[in-house]
Length: 490
Image: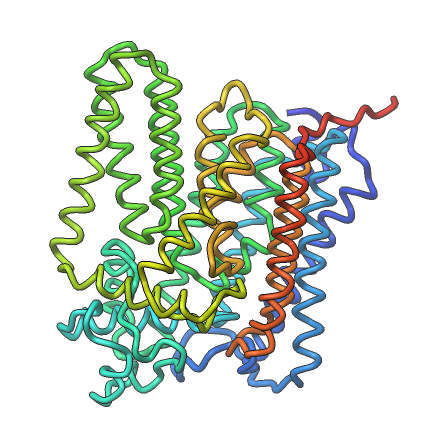
């Protein structure tokens, strides 16, 4: 670590204006988002009922002002990330301890304000409450809970009222634990869900630090792209989306496999592969789309281990992952797959302008999605720059994660949690700006987001395809080059 270890702005080659812009933009974004949520305004905070622990000033904010505030916070956060990346290229090396401390403060702040910018956490609370009451959330719906007159069911959000849960057994277990702790209070159930997400966010930051190793420049990228990334903090902690529950075991699986590369014993390697695959299976058992980066993890094992050893690791790994999934889905029952199929038939929140017939047939929807994912994934595999020599596993996992998110028909900004931690372990390139720009664009389109209005979806169905076309053209043209550090005089 170069420079003073006692200051967040340490580093002898720092560019003061960029560093100041990074810190000011990130801090402004976090504080403005927190203030907007703390108003309790229903355009950004869903109805979670009384008796919660949240900071709530019960202050009404006009829709236009709320929209401007959300846009300011989003743009300030994006500007802070981009300025931070530029500063890192010019030698800024923020103190890791102070970065983690700042992340912890931001996390606590976001845990103490109500769930923001979507109704997903309400749904999580509903599904957890069903389990506590002895109902199967893969069959029972929020509307069914509402008809029972349950206090949590009475607050069920409209958009998903007839939809059983589409999340896997690990997510359902976390939701049930939160519901057990929160009792009959929607507010308290969501609070415990947010506590879990806050802990997971910090844990991901710690794991990324381990994966980045001792290199200060790589640790600085982790700080900017994840640990103090205002947009990730907002969507993952303030919004408390379940995607984060899958990110953590996926990264721990990567860390276990990296540790196994140093071992010569095939037996120990086999056990490591089993543990890593069990963790990967847990990620899929949160959200099925995480099967894509898990596939990238398997590709990394195949490419990076010698013949004979890799076959053993993949076989052992497949057994461990399938065991976790089999046990989980045996517990919740086969209705889970039917629930997911039902969700695939929904066209209300599609971000791509496709014919209605695609949404009327789950098989056709699946085929179209697979084609898009393969197209994006193929271009990424062709044109994405090489990763760090010490982290060769990251590139295939990142490619698969990007393919499933960018190639998806539904593209909410919190889905980006699948690839931002991996991007933080990747060399600097123009991919950074493209992906920060993407989450900024979608966030501006859908915020404020309770509920997301029809005109917001209409805007998304224009702007997201335009962005994707521009990105794919740049990708095919080979524009995603690795950015070299900028020399600083003196």
